[in-house]
Image (cartoon, rainbow, N blue to C red; front, side, top):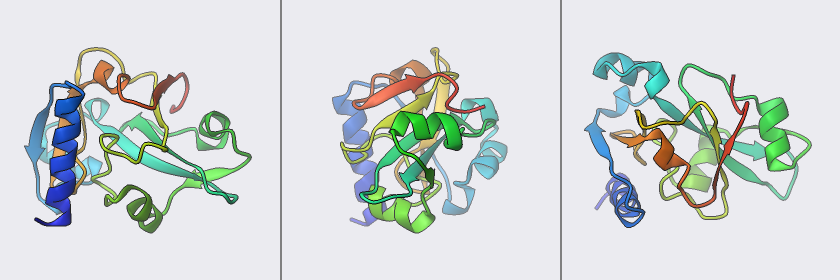
Length: 163
């Protein structure tokens, strides 16, 4: 089994164990980036959620997985930094994201992250609308109800996380 297939299998297992209903869309890796995915599959950007790993600047490194709608931007310099309790933070590099999460950019998902990584969810991601997120690889997207994201272990909804 390839690494991508192993991650996808763990993600599906996580969702089943958490009793979170979900849908899937299989895509080619070159369709995984949000703008392309939304265009190809007819998904509105406000129904697509990016999972972005943010890292503290100073050692020991601290991380947070931030969930924001595709049509918004994370407030890294204020809200995310404050929620992480650090003086400075920034987006983790593609390489750092892969090492910390085991997932490639474009496929990062809040499902099956290492348990020490908090999940910060922008408060706009709420309700029973289906939201599309990475499925752990660049070949899978997962659709879940927005409110189910707040039920994830280690997750908290944050007002003003993105704008």
